[in-house]
Amino acid sequence: MNESNSVVLARDVEASMIPIGTKVTLQKGESAQITQSLGGSHTVVVNGNLFRIEGKDADALGLQAAEKKSGATAGAVSQEQVEKEIWNQLRTCYDPEIPVNIVDLGLVYDCHIEPIATNSFKVGVKMTLTAPGCGMGPVLQQDVQNK
Image (cartoon, rainbow, N blue to C red; front, side, top):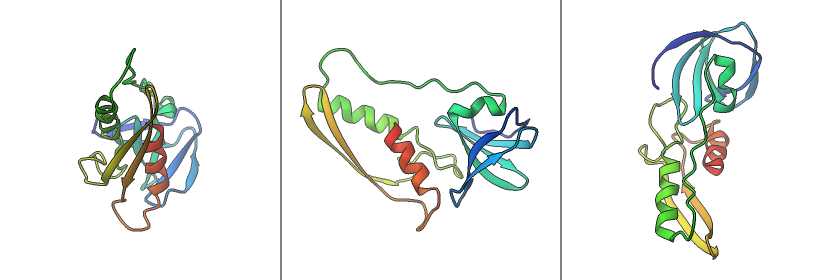
């Protein structure tokens, strides 16, 4: 979803201020305009400021939390299958200001997969940010780690 909807916050909710990343609490009853709902998180404007709200808190916006999709399969998986699923998951990580995922933005430089046991892999992702010193960097990094 990438459209504008006006809502009234149904409860207090933690949000990250964009672009600095500072955590704040938006108050129940405040008016918010949803500008972007992609990759399981929501970007809203409250009192002229941009904020990112995690998908788990979608109920504060009157929305249903997105269900986590798992690419897990039964049985043995190949390194190629794992790599494909990692890239699919990375494509669900969105810059909160731009409705484009981090892969298509060209922010991911490398994805290194190392087998450590049967059906168990260690993954390393090299990425950059849209701007030096971006305050949302830790938020995007955590999003990548979670996925």
